[in-house]
Image (tube, rainbow, N blue to C red; front, top):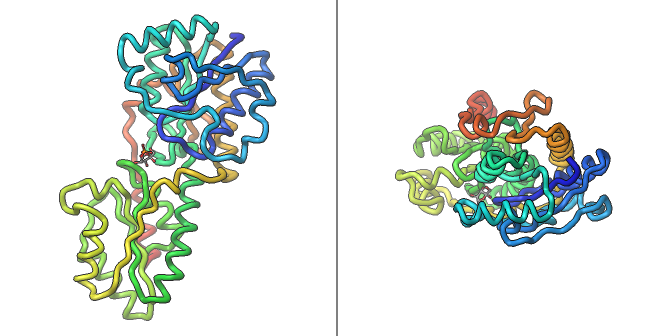
Length: 325
Ligand code: F6P
């Protein structure tokens, strides 16, 4: 294989640039030329291609976002979109592609592989919701951003004897809430994977106050507010306020969780995954998603990665409950 393409797709995640750099430089080391595809699968359809030599990926390792830009493409899912993509692939002589993104992006990787273009998926999302990997690129940075916010919110919550509810991202997954809640010492962590009782949350808050605690932090995953019991985080705050008699402030962290310089963990993870993707393509292997399990880089078939069931870390959740007594 002499020419490969790389694209980022779906929501951006810190560490995507480190992955792009690893693809380009491992490719160059193996005498492969890398073409950057701009704006994900949309760029592939609309001929937004530019060559990336080893200097083009200099000075990006520490930068958040993605130099290739990203998009979610509806057009690519259509027959016509696919055909256009195949024309561009032929035009540039692209023999293999690395797709960095979430599970939606992996479907694109599978479809391209089926059409004879070996394609490798790298899990790039802050949500940590990809079953075939212990960690996704961007998750570590996102939870560190949340911890930083929790530290600051605790300062002001203590000064005013308030309860602080922090709503974090994660789509349907509670990992950002779970990990940042543990690291940030939250009293309660609410995730979509497990049921919760507002009364139990209030009981814990009151218990803490009775032994002199000046603040209470509740971390809530955005996926939870989508169910019927709570129509929104603000409403949950009002309910807790009414039940405890304590003032509640709600902070919805939003897209701040998607930005920032990647942590060392994300940079190393992205570098290792990017290198594995190129090694697979070099052997003409496609239709795989790369992951990390027990600190080993692994790869599984795309279809398997898409159908694998994610397991929520209940042990960690129990630990959080014990430690936040
Ligand atoms: O998948 C990453 C993510 O940040 C989710 O946590 C969040 O639900 C979603 O993307 C937000 O998407 P958008 O940036 O399109 O608003």
